[in-house]
Amino acid sequence: MARILIIEDETEIASYLRRGLSLEGYRVDVAFDGAQGLNMAATGNYDLIVLDLMLPEVDGFEVARRLRVESSIPIIMLTARDAVRDRVAGLEAGADDYLVKPFAFEELLARIRAQLRRQQAGQRQDILRFANLTLDTRSRELRVGDRRVELTAKEYDLLELFMRHPNQVLTRDIIYDRVWNYDFGGESNIIEVYVRYLRQKLEANGEPRLIHTVRSVGYILREDGS
Ligand code: CA
Image (cartoon, rainbow, N blue to C red; front, side):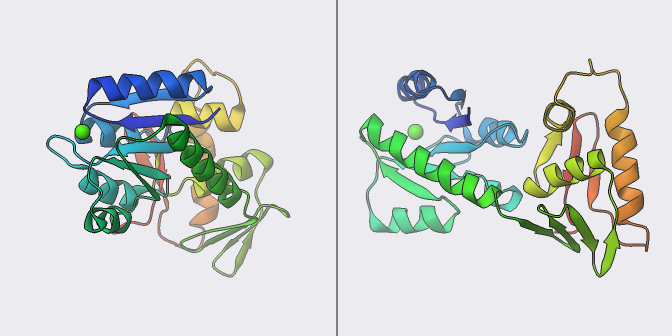
């Protein structure tokens, strides 16, 4: 089931939303300010973010802008204001949808479902591209620039995970869970081994590094200097 991060400083609204969305079967976490929200979003643990516009310290516009630099996660912005200016600014900052308080819970639910459907449709796309990489998910063929590269089954699974979540930190737990489907107990160095294999293949002609280590957390697919 989809995992939703709510970034909302008003505790009553936050717990109302958490309760309602949990009852619908979503896994829900709450951040009570923008900085905490950005930190939690950076784990790559979420499929969608419900973001309040009026937040202390880092406001919703800024949070949306920073999230957008890092990922394409769907963002639904909540606001008490209904000025056209705010709506446009929210969408320009990177929100995918916009809901004015007070809103009916069913309305939020409908918007969440629509965004998740759109996201999943996007994730089913056959050809994934990032920097000089082109991965055909039907034939499981990888090209690095013009160079055709052979991957083993696990190398492919790991690279596909990275390419479906570019510019997002993937924790070791998430990688274990999605690629190996079970818990290694944290002792195994199998992720390091496979990342090394992938790097050797992606960088065989001196191409720039794309899979970067995030010390003591995991890895990120990212173009340096971007
Ligand atoms: Ca607020």
